[in-house]
Structure formats: structure tokens, C-alpha cells
Image 1 (cartoon, each protein chain N blue to C red):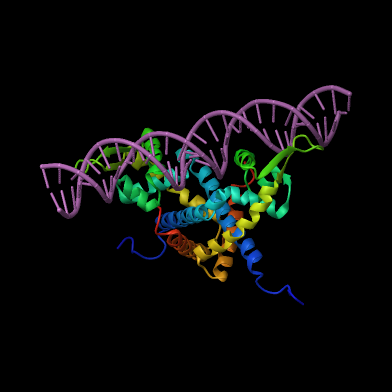
Image 2: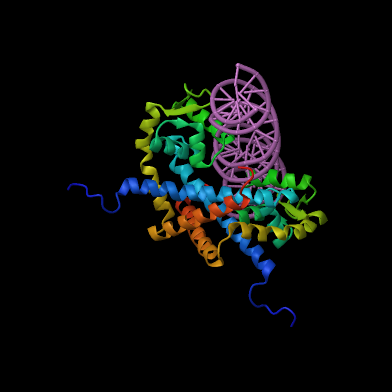
Length: 159
Length: 159
DNA sequence: CACGATTGAGTTGTGCACAATCTAATCGGG
DNA sequence: CCCGATTAGATTGTGCACAACTCAATCGTG
């Protein structure tokens, strides 16, 4: 009599929902990681390395900071990642002349050439995702809104 | 005349879209991580540790393998994670009597007690996400479909 | 010009994710 | 019963994510 099994039992409901949304996101992100891992194996790139290469393919030589802003990654992640790409011969890092603090990242010929071989990757991913374009666009919109909200909420301080 | 700037320029379009969807997902996942990081700081739990604790709170003592199946994590991730939770005094790991290969994970009183303090977390996350319930449900549905597709695609072999 | 603040980058340490490899216990046929 | 296959779990190694810290170059203001 006391607690009829009716709508929204606030706390427990929130908890379950919370569990599911954060978990779904986590799982989807890792599932994507798995598909990219096999799609990128031929190129000997990891997924975050692929992201960095895409930024350089699209926007040309730029300082480390710019790459970090586009990918929302900090130096602690990017510095070693770019070092690995450099020792793989895909790019060079050189101190900027006009600002000695800044390091310009520039693809080598080999790095530029890799773009051709990477062109088949998106198709493979799209096939694996197997979702109509509408849904993809809806999903992307929701994710971007969510990310903005989360970033704003945790907001001012840190990152 | 030859190439009117009309719909779906197949390769480039795919590439851009691909970039955006995978990137959005990646970014959203990390944004969630950030919010959880601050919400869980009081409990001295990381987000994956929190996930493992939720499984144990909800489903009681169980072997490592069962936890791994619920979270889709393998032993390589789970073993050290559970060890850290054990040395924090939140759980115990004991070899099963009837199958010496299996290890049963069981919360301590301290681990059970932590549940109370964790009840406020989902609300904080929901507030940070700041999205209507409808959108959350839509998003979750899309993510689950996506994850299933991706898992199926990369499918048979490995994991 | 001088000096404190800021900025771009790197380093260190912790923890997660996952592939590959290893061990010991259990299972299944012949 | 025995031996090969499978299974539960742990370990190792690589790479990403991020906090905290360090350092040198640059900027701003008195």
C-alpha cells in the first residue's frame, strides 16, 4: 500500500538510468576503438594517432597547441603521441623561429602519402556502424550537446 | 558542368562524417569521464572502479568473469582494478571452493556502506548532462544499436 | 628596462584498455 | 584412467588520458 510500483521512483530510477547512459557511451566508445584498431592495423596507427594525422592532413602544419585544441587533448597526451609518430617517420617537430616556445608539427612526405591509404578507412567504419545517415546525424547532435553541457558543468576550473 | 556541387560527394563526405561521429563519441566519453572524476573524488573511486562497484552492489558476490561480461571488460583490465579495490578495503577476492580456477569477488562491509555515499552521484551526473529524458532515451537507444553493430561487424574473431 | 605573470611544451606518475602469453584447474573422449 | 582441449585468472608490455610539476620563452606593466 505504501509505495505503489508507479512512475518515477526518483533515486533508483536516476541511478539505473545513469548507469545505462554512461555505460552505453563507454561501451560504444570502446566498440569504436575495436573497429578502428583493425581498420588501422595496416597503417600501423592507433585511433588517437589517426585523429592527429587527420588534423594534419586537413589543416596542414601547425603548433602542438592547435592540435590539442582541435582534439581537446592536452600536452601530456599529445607530446608522447607525436613523438611516436615522429619516430615512425610520419612527421617532424621543429621549434618555431618567431616564438621559441612553440613547436611546429609538419608531415613528412611519408606522412602525406599515408593519406591515400587511409581513404578506405571511413568507408569500413561506416559499414561497420551500419546506421542510416539520419540516425548518425541525430546521434552526433545529441553527443555534441551532451559534451558541451558536461564541459560547461564541470566548467570554469581545470581543463 | 562536369561535377556540380550537389549531393553526397561520396569519399570526402564519408570522411568528414566519419571524423565527426567517431570524434564526437570519443569527446563525449571523455567529457563524462571528467564529470565523474570530480563527482567520485570524495569516494576515492575512478569511473571504471565505480562501474565495478555498481555491478557488485546490484548483483552481489560473483566471479571475476561475470563482472567482465557485464562490463565487457577482460581480465587484463579487471584483475588490477579489483586488486586496487581490494587493497582499498572495499572487497575481498577468494578462490571458489568447488572450482579452484574461479575467484569470487565479495564486498566488505565498508564496500557495502559506500553505496549510501554513492547515491548522490547519479543526480549530479544527470544535472551536469542537462538533457531531457526523451533525448537521453533516444541517445541510449542509438548508442546500443551502434555498439551491437560494431561488435557484430568486427565480430567473429578476437574478443 | 626589470620583474612577475602567463604561455607552450615536456616529464612523471597513476590508472584504464587491450593484445599476447602463461599457469593451473577442469572437462571430455578414447 | 589419461591426455589433449578448454577455461578462469594473472601477468607483461604498449599506448592513451589526465593531474601535477618543471622549465624556458614571452608578455605586460610599472
